[in-house]
Length: 297
Ligand code: SF4
Image 1: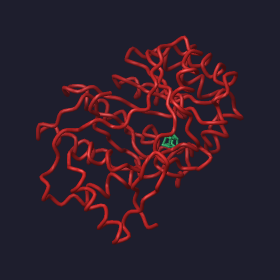
Image 2: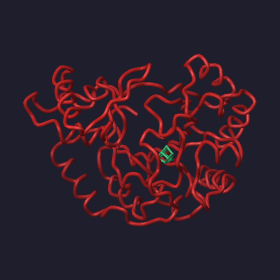
Image 3: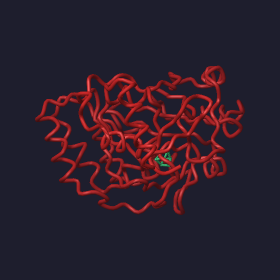
Image 4: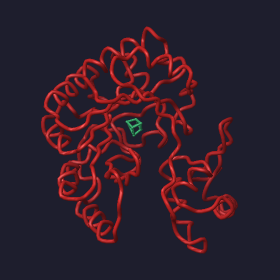
């Protein structure tokens, strides 16, 4: 998606799912109840301010640590972006797509990327751990209704976990459902950052490549780390609030933080060490790298 400005309409972490692989940690408010979780007027003011200060991006994306369509006014944000020189995107778990008002509001996005990683109710419950009231069949029906009316770009993400949905027979069933929705693009993804639950284990890229052949839709293997986001604050700037804000949303490597902030490794390494000593961050040493996250060891 190039450079994307993420907009969070949800207080962490409110979601209708509690996915094994979630990079935002376990769900703390597990609900299907729609509400005005943050004042949308404040979000629109912040966005307006960002544009006035010359902010540019390829996309403004409704995403974050939770399900954006749980916010009753997410459509107002998409509507406000229409006259702006930027594309809008919505990342959704589709749990509310059976509601006509959610489909109507979601259709205001230029790009909708929905997730679909299970093939039946049982696999859905095991992988995505939905709250009461969410039904897999209803999700498929909602996505079908949305797809048949939506004129923007429609992508689907399939998250592949070792031993859970990477069996070719199971993936073939997922692929059939995915292909029936005629996505413009499919992202085949696996766990990159530390997941909410340790039972979520990544598959290797070779396996993803093999599974990609089961889809008729165009597939991209989506395992990239974030790209450079341009120069950030000066090296003397107080980076601590930014670092804490980023790692409180999702675990990050030092390289991720450098890419997001535009700061050199030495500077960030120094700040992270101070935050570690102060007990404000912790580090998870994993085979694929050290991941920094908010909180005490
Ligand atoms: S991955 Fe998305 S849908 Fe799943 S628990 Fe996390 S925020 Fe919710």
